[in-house]
Length: 167
Length: 337
Ligand code: HEM
Ligand code: FES
Image 1 (cartoon, rainbow over the protein chains, first blue to last red):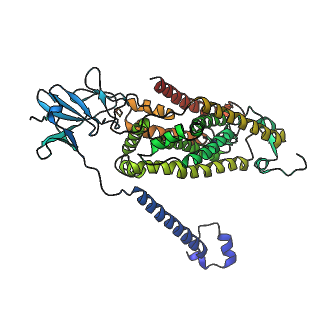
Image 2: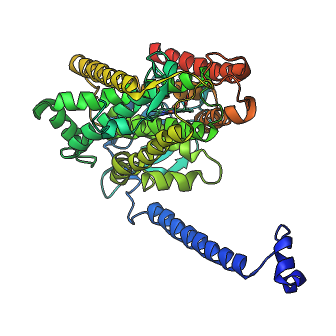
Image 3: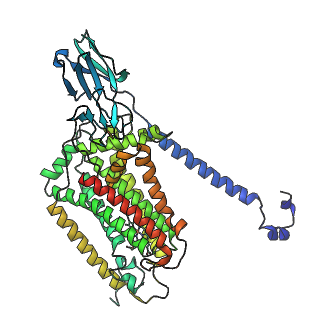
């Protein structure tokens, strides 16, 4: 900084070295404020675009009467996107959403489930057998609601694979 | 020609052009054809916007209206669809031309703009595919948005930013619509203008030093011919082959054969064998990075400009060929599955 006090003729020759005079300070200030303002505006635009309107859909879906699911049956409930099964132990619901990237799994001719998107295979219990899916299909909480007089499933509540509803 | 003032179209060209490079078998007009298709997309898309309804309930129905009821709507939609698909092809072929004739040499910035344009061409095509809102769209969006979620750290935030909510619904469609008809088009238009401006700034189409030159009239005549041929071809396929439209998107319906749009089939194939983050995010980013870096990392020489399969660019040509062959092989595998 002490170089700033030199005579102008000398100063001109010194221009090559690192100098920080009033002009470059003001330039830096101007550019800095423009950059800061742009950053601030862009950040707010990103926040605006990330905004999510309030109110989310319920994760609880009706499945109808239990006698719609006789022992030995396994049926797809489109609205709830679940398979409802009834084996010797009782009723259970399997999430049809593939744990790989979210396609809906179909019944496989050789038993179990297959995902049509990238060919992940799952067994009856939803365990991942082959393909890119590494996690099993989720068993979801299923119960009989006395008030509504029908079966309900909560898509956001997972249960152990062995859990069965016995009526 | 001599006494008239050159019109605007002439004016876009330099007064003289290297003879060989002005001929039909150097650039094959591929950049210009890509530009023409982009313009056709802009015009046909603008007309479609007057009828298309960007809501989950209205989208598929409005496309059915365009396709089956509006006078010549089918032709309009087919032309918009086929121009988009052809453009993917011409842009990739254009890129190949640039690689194999050493056209990236001494014009690396323009190469980078070109790589960005490849990205925009694909993303514009994908966002357009989403607007169809049929069953293919529904599952491709499902897979695509879950892929975004697989990015460590910023995945969820980016996902919400893209679809405007936790699940794909009306906000997502509106966002894809806005990107497709305005935001991406705007940026792509600026990039294309800059790209073509750079060609002139870099001294016109690349050519050997002190190559013989001809007046621009010859090139302009060829360009008009290429334009007519392209339009005829576009018109031809649009008359004969209809753009696909499946049943309306229903996120609860089971479907048998979900297929990614053809230009992303190679990603769908990779997703069968590799983790989502690797196959769906890292590999595509890596490919764009490698392509962008080719003239920086693998061939910095300025010899071999405008020489087909020039010695200096052998490695660049090889790497490009490997990427291209890999993508084509995977695409074919996905297509015949
Ligand atoms: C929207 C897509 C594109 C359009 C409309 C476009 C347009 C053009 C045009 C009109 C030219 C001059 C003549 C010609 O070569 O045909 C050109 C040259 C060029 N393009 Fe593109 N292009 C696009 C995409 C790309 C891509 C994907 C790349 C490569 C990554 C690329 C790299 C280049 C380079 C390096 C040149 C100069 C070549 C030379 O001077 O020999 N472009 N582009
Ligand atoms: S989404 Fe099911 S295997 Fe990929």
